[in-house]
Image 1 (tube, rainbow, N blue to C red):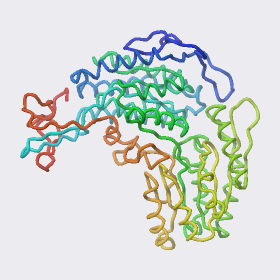
Image 2: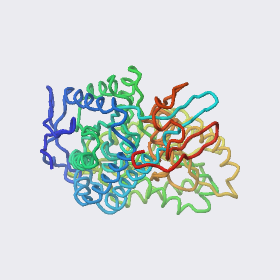
Image 3: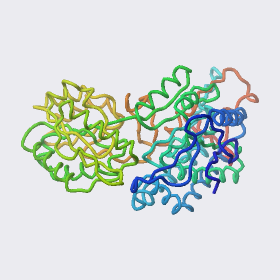
Image 4: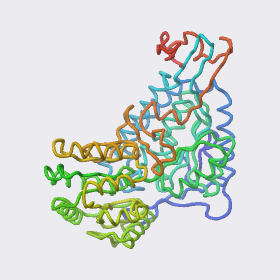
Length: 531
């Protein structure tokens, strides 16, 4: 393993170049509240500048990263992660308190290597380029690598969304872009171990040494400077709305694309017929979803919408009893707990009723009581912005509308979310479901029926995106290949350019490439290893 205080820049592990202020930090074990050795550096701008220079040099050579070699890297890296699974899961468990079984070893690590292998298949096939050839006008176009990409990883998926191994990383690399990973400071040792494996795979397959670079932490100012730098081509961020909007403002001011996943309360509408037919099942599914991972999922169902009736009162009571009977899970950090407590208090101060929970759990473990709030539809409509505040963690709020008309009005006041769910009984709720679907559909990226939203399948059909403020751009997904690759590409067009001056992928009968020739899609010839 590399020395504790080293960063991966320019293809080498080296000591960080730090500036004034806080220059190092340690992870904290959420189960004990104790700091964990070793220390990790907070890089100054000089580190970011060197990483940008190295990435820009790779991007300047379009032949440096052929698709076949990218695919070889992703396959080799996935195999290395599997080989070191025990170590990686132990590190992630220590830094996040996520259980090794089943969460890390049986769910998240297989997801991580699975999406790396899907990205490898996309890189090798090359269909993500969407080659279009107009022979009548001799105009040709394709998607190509955008250039250096900076990825800011989140706190809640130390493997599957890690800046140096996760979905954004896989998508950016699949298109042939050099990546500068900004690890999350809650799990630096996990990120370092992954970066070491990635770098070794880069060297084994013969990609440019600086194809994957990593910094542990930078200042807020340097983070904004990084996404706005002329040498960066695109950035991706998963995290809080506050930090995401700060980065977006900096990137927008410089005309740089940045793809953000920020906050989502993922409304769940439970219609009366469904509640009457299977209330106990829906309560059980809700509790299992809202408390999974201590509620620290971007698709956590934080808002349940009901029509007031005896069954809805019973739903709230049974959900509260179930929450109160279960031990509170461990949160990722003291900051997460602080923000959760502050959000719950703000909702209560605004008029929400505390049904259960609402307090910090004592002791060294970082935890907060399982919390359920309740609200009337009239209260929600009086302050919809306040009552859509995300309480990230093991908390949720139930809103009881007085009738279906008020329920639909609540849905009209929802902001953009990653997901929206409708529980219905087809015979009793069919018409109401149609009406609510029409309202909810443009407000969410993924619409579900009779299924809680927690969990995002790595499927080509998946949309893990949604309207603002869930993301910064509703037209893209962070999960699902090859669609997720689109964010890290640019459209190139060639008009009247002769064959010998075209990229190989745009020439007539380019082997193995999918092409749209005069409006008809076809695959030309057999693929070669380096396509």
